[in-house]
Length: 168
Image (tube, rainbow, N blue to C red; front, side, top):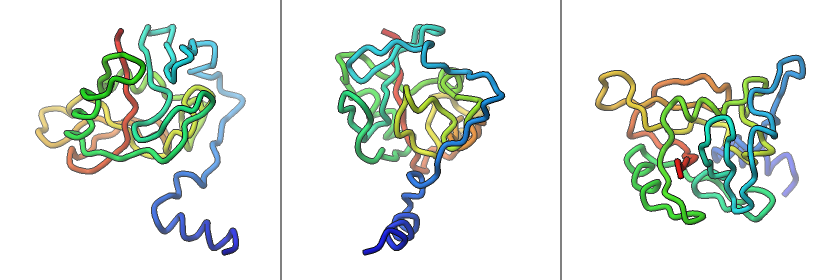
């Protein structure tokens, strides 16, 4: 099978997230420079500006010591909360970040994805859950689409991606 056909098939199967190259504007100062994070050498980083510990990989991916491997898993909001509660990665307690925490890792000088790929490699170019309800809605939660990094609301029943945070 030739490369063009493989790319077409992957994009039709919903894997177009892997095919877009990140675009960064060098005239905009980085909002999440590498030196803002300490590599904990266990698949996590500590954001020294907030003290928060982040999983470097999205749920469903695995850290190989250098990068995030595999395809991230999309979850409904309820399943994202459950999986966060069940995770014991790096012997820490994990949770869905609130919208302010998740927005804090958005790299404003880049799009598709709008995240520091050195710190968070292979981030999906899609929406990530927060724990913050959107207004008084019973069915909507704030999320961050890492295509642009601009927060939006999303239905709790639609599957989106998850990056977990720890306060330990």
